[in-house]
Image (cartoon, rainbow, N blue to C red; front, side, top):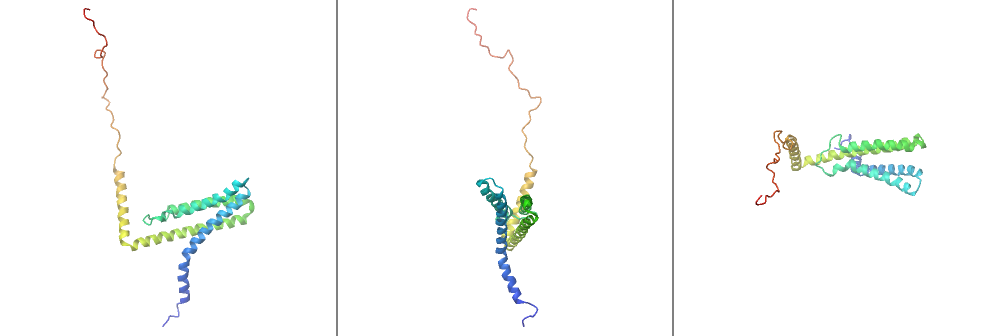
Length: 204
């Protein structure tokens, strides 16, 4: 008998949502990157003195956002590189967020508080999505490694071997040049032992 306590339509909706959310979250993150860069470009271009600066006003924010995404997710290219809670990606995302908020404050200040709050909120949403995707990616990578016992054991052996190698290298004393003893002196030829160029003629 089918249970009346379970809403199967809701279960199916959850399964569909779980299939959609990964693509949706990455799409939203890329969208926040592009929109943030375009907004900064529009307001920078208004104060640009010539066409070159107007073009750079859009290219620089786009390059910054592209570099931000690369820095945040770069170490996910290698599943064996285990990331910690405060990994380089989290530090990079937080640092660049603070710089972006500072830029938004100085650029949007002449246009009122509402613009500043709106753009800052967009940047904060992008940062939250970054951290959530990064954490889920790290967790999925660890689960994938754990399911494959051979790769899991190989990775543990590698990290143990690397730690042993680092301990060995830290224990190796640094070599120093051999010091010259103080009693050692370089002797120079005496006057009497020096060769002479004087040739004595016969009969003298």
